[in-house]
Length: 588
Ligand SMILES: Cc1cc2nc3c(=O)[nH]c(=O)nc-3n(C[C@H](O)[C@H](O)[C@H](O)COP(=O)(O)OP(=O)(O)OC[C@H]3O[C@@H](n4cnc5c(N)ncnc54)[C@H](O)[C@@H]3O)c2cc1C
Image (cartoon, rainbow, N blue to C red; front, side, top):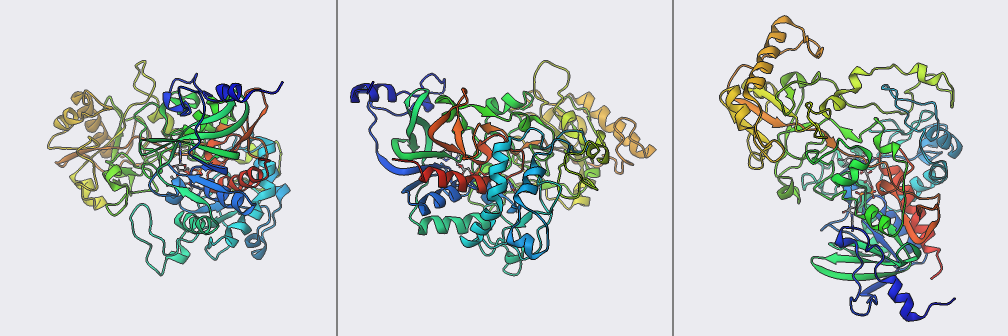
C-alpha cells in the first residue's frame, strides 16, 4: 500500500532514536516530524580521508553531484598523517615494469589463505570476507593506475615490503606516494626539496586527490560532522540523508542517491573498541593519527542506529600488525612510534608535546601502575605477514605454519603491558618509562617542554626514586606509584646490570643502572592504531544489516568497514572508488 506523504515523513523522522547517544538522532522538525533539508546532492560522502576523497572524485566523475563532509578544519584524516605506503597489487604497471608477477587471482588467493600465520600463531587472512577481498583484488591494479592518473606521484622504485602489513606472500606490492613539496601535518613544513620526490608520505596521496576533487566540482564542507543518518523508517527503507553539526549549527543534508560512510574507524572510541578487546580502557588514549582527526566510531554508530551489522570482529582482536603498538615517543599523550607532533604542526596545541624518541630500550625500564617491571623492554610488538615471510610459500598448504618461526616470547610485550596488576579493573593501567640523567645524555634528550607534557601529567622529574614515585599522579594514575615498589624495582634492576643477566624477564644483558639524579618518569602506555573490523559491507561496498539485507542508499569503506585484515591505504582507496562508482549508479 502506498504511504501518504504525512505517514512517510512521520516514519522517516526519528530513525535511530533508540540509540542512547542523543547526537545520533536526525535533526528533524520536532513539531511536524518533517525533515527540512538544508542542502542536497546525489551522493554525500562522510569523511575526507583515504576512502572519502577517492569516493567523492569517482562519484563525481560518474556523473553525480557530490558533497564531501569533513569533521575537522582540514581534509586528510589519518591518511595525511600516514607514511604513504600503498600496497596495491594484482598486476600494476609498476609491478610489470619491475617484472613482478602478480594478478587479481594471486592477490585474492594470498589475502584469503587460511594457512598463513604470524610468529605468535595468529592467522592473518583466515577470517577475511571473500566477497570483499574478491572486489579488492579485481580493483587493486586499476586503482593504482587511477591514482597516478589523478595526480598522485609514486616514488620511482620497484614495489617492495617497506611499511607493508598483511599484503600477502606471493609478490611485493608496496608502492610509496611521494611527499613532493606539500607541507606535513606533523611539522607544518615540507620535506627538503631534494628528498620530497623520493620520500613516502600520506601528503603525497591526499593533497593531489584534494586538488582533483575540488577541480572536478566536489563540494567539500569542512567542520561539518555527521551526527546521524536519516532512513525512511528506523530499520527499513532507503537512507535518505544525514544530520550534521557545523560549529554548533544543525543541518540536514539530503542524499538523493546515497551516503558513503568514510569516517575512518573506531579505535578512539573507548566503549566501541572494547567490543573487540575489553582490555582497551581509557588510558589507551594515544591513538595513532589523533589529534589530526578522531577515530570516534561516529560512522559505525550512525549506521548501526539504522540497522547495520558489524562484521569480521576477529580481524580487530587478532594479534598481528599494528592494531595495538608499543609506543615510540615517551613523555607525551600521542606517542605512536612513527609520528611525533612538532610545534609547527597546525594541531600542536592539541598534541601539546612531541615526546622523547627512544633509540635504545636499554636506556629505560618500563613499569606498570604498581611500580613493577612486566617484560623485557627491548622486545617489540606483534608480527606481520608479507611477501617472503614464508619461504617457500605454497598457497593453502598445511605446511606453511611449520615454516614460520614460532616466537611467543617476543610477541607478548603488549599482552604483558595490558595484563593489569591483579585487580578487577579491565585495563592494564599506565605504563611508565623510568630513567636517569645518564640515560638522558646517552639518548641526547632534552627532557623539557615542548618535548614532554608536564602540565597534563605525562612526565615527571625528581631527585630520588621515592620522590619520583610519589609525584606520578595524573588522571589515569590517581594515587602515585608505591614508592617501596619502585625503589625495589630499580634496585633489583641495577643488580641485574651488575650480574649481566635479567633474572625476571630475560632482557638481553641489561646494560645501564638507574643511579644518577635527576630521575624521570615518562608516559609509555601502548598506542591503539588500526581499525580492521567495522560495518558489514558486500563487494559493492553497500552496507548490510543484521538480517543480511542491503541497506539501500548506504555505502562504506576503509577502516569503518569490516571483513578485511590489512593495514591501511590500499583497501581504503580501492573501496572508496568502488563505493563512489556504485553510489553514482543508484537511481534517484
Ligand atoms: C601515523 C600513521 C601512519 C600510517 N601509515 C600508513 C602507511 O604507510 N600505509 C598504509 O597503508 N596505511 C597507513 N596508515 C593507516 C592509514 O592512514 C589508514 O588506514 C587510512 O587513512 C584510513 O582511511 P579512512 O578513509 O578509513 O580514514 P581516514 O583517512 O582517517 O579518514 C577519515 C576522515 O573522516 C572524518 N570523520 C570522522 N568522523 C566523521 C563524521 N562523523 N563526520 C564527518 N567527518 C568525519 C575524519 O575527520 C577523517 O578526516 C597510517 C596511519 C597513521 C595514523
